[in-house]
Length: 350
Image (cartoon, rainbow, N blue to C red; front, side, top):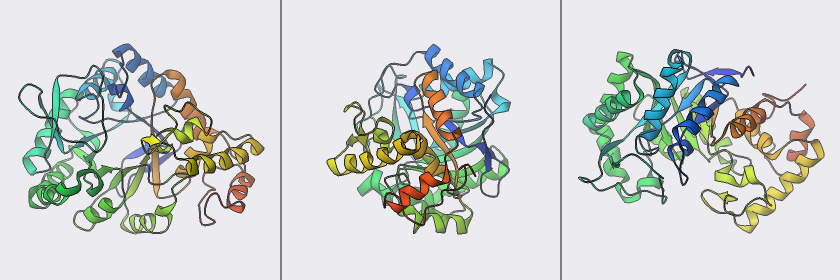
């Protein structure tokens, strides 16, 4: 078994392994996933040292929570791992409700017969959490993320949903945390601005942020990371491959060679080609560089990656575990591919 490094969430007692398994793909994101396939991925992750598992009501419209909870229970792993799920959506019978509008065209294959509705009020958060407890079969979780509390996601409705949090949603989060049902509260979003907005109004322990700090996106170095570190907010990083291009590379399958969920534009592919050239010089895979670039920053507690097969898990564990020579990071800086201010020493070999 690989022994993965652990880091603590903010001022809580929750520790996460450097790599977490995200179960959005296993919920049937564009592909049909059997229970047996789901189980094989979870058990392989545990075998290889992963002790953090993330899910959400949205993933497979309840399917991911049902499957993950059952797998962990029947294999005696519930008390041996850290769990996170999300609130802000309530699942209702598809015959009686209209599905919430989404920023992306999400296609859940063979999902459960529900639709999701946004609700960030006290009652909405409490109901969402209680429903998640039942689907997972647990009496509490380590982290509860408020899902998609973001102006980018909700656009014209953002202030309305933020108003629900201000009016009563924050109170629900505070009660769940103070009762011990939840050990940490954060946001689960695809942007950084909303994390800072909510953090100015409510005491966040952490946040899951997807795709904002990667080998191709560096802005958080200058504004976001310094502020969350000042506030003691831990970041769990998702989307570290920018939805595909940093995993597939510049010559990969065009269908999954995406950048922020759309076809990677020529200028992005040109930057990836330059990254690949340095990777080849130092015998470092592009996924390894992408993974460790993100995890090396002390603001980041863990990276979360999805997987659809045990081999995917093996690749993800290898990417976080491989020793990378310091000269590799120096070369990236010297060629202007990452900022000189990048923190690149956390996992590098001496």
